[in-house]
Image 1 (cartoon, rainbow, N blue to C red):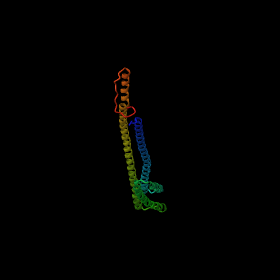
Image 2 (cartoon, rainbow, N blue to C red):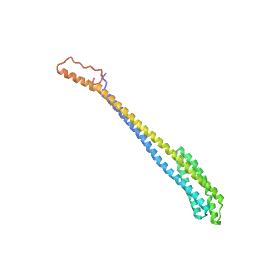
Image 3 (tube, rainbow, N blue to C red):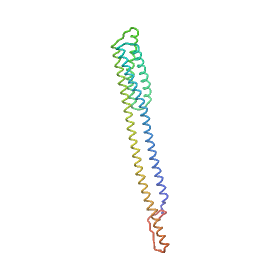
Image 4 (cartoon, one colour):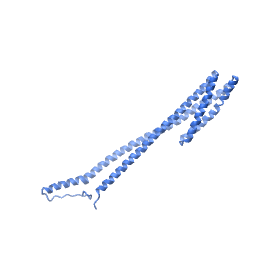
Length: 241
């Protein structure tokens, strides 16, 4: 039975094309994951900026309360009230955004945000302290000092949430680096597989095609020169054989 050499070559080429497509597809998928992680890191950096600002606002709130304790003035009272409202607005908006996400870390952030909102509800009572001052010119110093603890608590909470953000970024960076190594490994394996395939293909063509044709050509030349006892032997069962 004659083995079809052309069919063998066609099958080998199809296998090679499939391997190329698989390697390319996997590489594209991993590259897309790396780009996605880069986008997530960019978004998480914006969240870090939000809580850096929140931490700054909490610090400014503490300063405003300190200044008011040292030198009672409506300017400091208005600044403190404004900062409390701003912190509350940012916290509520960010919590609503986090509730729409499906990350496990979102639950941790929401738990911290709930504590922040509780502190804000207590802090809003300083409005009554400042209103008493605007009406009577006096205020409860101990009560105002007590409210400072809630502002400090918000500062700490903002730092804790950013720790969660930094942990997310570190995880995405680790995943991206791992995927880059996978792409490199895949590329190296592909080079090794391709080089080996080329070598095997060269050997197969050399043994099954080139060498028999050379032997046949040499025998033909001898036959033309009058040597009629020359024989060419082959074990190949292909068209060339």
